[in-house]
Length: 292
Image 1 (cartoon, rainbow, N blue to C red):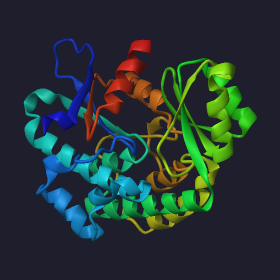
Image 2 (image 1 turned 180 degrees about the vertical axis):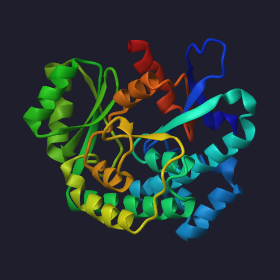
Image 3 (image 1 turned 90 degrees about the vertical axis):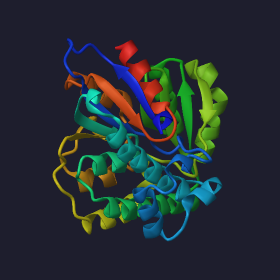
Image 4 (image 1 turned 90 degrees about the horizontal axis):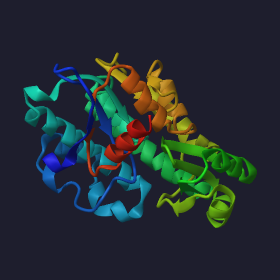
């Protein structure tokens, strides 16, 4: 299972055990067969029982099934990592998740019970998919180019910054026509290479308001405990203070991932451990810390 536990960076720790942050991926890190190493794992099987459907067989249908599937793999990877890591891993002092990954981070920190988190992720996925169906939108990654010019382009077209992932990687979100225009003029106006994201809505934009309200209602009925370690919120790039309120608001706010990584580093994190399918976050850590 070690191929699903990618150590992104270990910084100087003066010979002592490094202080670690756990990172959990978001939608986009999913892949066919990602569940294979975890079939039979108690948490994955419990999650499938709670969902009463198998999201892995329906990944091609998009957000509605990709999010629960990715969450279950991330939690199984975290639980397996705890058993395999041994004493050399260091002290875990923080966690963060990229969008959907926040739910796995909060489970790992003891703020959400696993069963409750499965229900929340299921509600979130359905609500976001429904919001995308009701109001056509999309997302586009702007790679390279001038960050100020990218932001000016977004303002001109009525788009929002949905993700600040790393230096040279901003993601725009909004109405589908505006996303198409951004793709056409990205190189000319911002010097950026545009790449459409395979998503079914304008995530982290005002078009997700209906989804945010549905999620807020589900969160109000969900027990939340004080996390054992700091869990950094996408919307503030700081530890959660109001978990229910921030999770609902984060559907509308940008994912401030670059700032989150820098804040964790400033808070003493020396090693970042990505838990879940793929290694997208590992790359973002390296890119962000090298630039800093």
